[in-house]
Image (cartoon, rainbow, N blue to C red; front, side):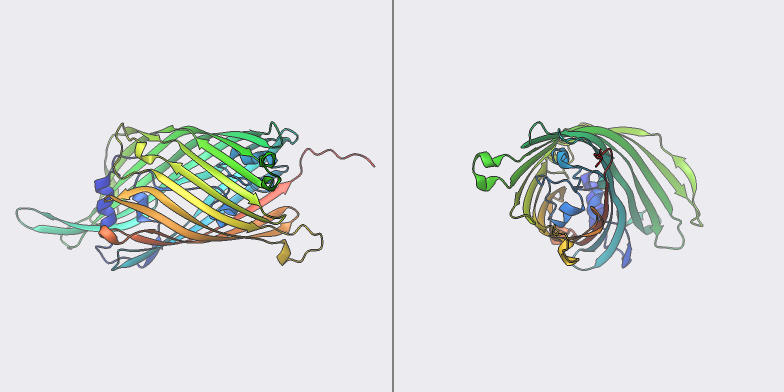
Length: 426
């Protein structure tokens, strides 16, 4: 959302992260969130995250997948789901390492069945679209006719893009379900650059760049469960499709400069606001699921977005490339037996994923892969606590770049209620 994050500047900050002595731990995220509009999210829910982020083709009444409107038609109860997520990044250039962590709200979603016989369900909420979060250093020097000033620059990025959405599903037949959502993208990105002279005879300063932006897209989804017309063995097979249209983000940026010999800054100068336009490319994904038994399901997803076609004020940034994501996993669902023991009423999930991110640093594609696990615990009726854990690796130390070892945890509260139900008198 900002001209400043071109390939040259972003790469210079990325390569300079370890040029000064790092803090061993702190608050922040991956240095790769310097690129584009930040570290892109894939908000399919805590359940799907535990299954390798596979969920576009899983039908079911108990969970809400914000990216797959076609799966909403089977939701038969009012549901509310809110999630929290924590990430830890152990980053290294092969010589030095640094650990940063962050925690965020990972979404809040509400569903309301309107016509169960027709599969009409309203779903709305907020989920993250990208995270702009880094804490890096680089060093340099300025040489004049009389002397040389050495200094370091501390770069801190905060903010991100949120997707607010609202939509409906409809099932024209038991085998086919359709859905759509209107998506509103909004958020702010803030970059703070504190110049720290390495000699006592100089004073530092800080430059702040704030950017706000918004735009809209549409998502269309479908779910097909009629493969038994081909073979009875294919009756447990489902296929889901989700497509999000190309969109435009319009943003305003402003830069403030603050200086003080006592490091108690006061505003000295503010640049006029500048506007920019960013095109967000179309995205589409396909998912398969197979209900092996009453309790066991396997699933796989593929999702892609051609970010090489994205434009900032009419120009395609060379640091962005087409992204592709593949994930697969399995779930052992809770037993439906009335007198099942506690452990039999838990849901267990495992999965793995590969993510070719949209970042290309110094001509090197930045890829990520990882393994996931999940657990679901019932606590009241149909309400559940869902947990997801993950270990992933992203990037490389080759070509002067950075490798991230990532640990992610998330938890969601999924509660339900029966509204507008009619009961007959006995």
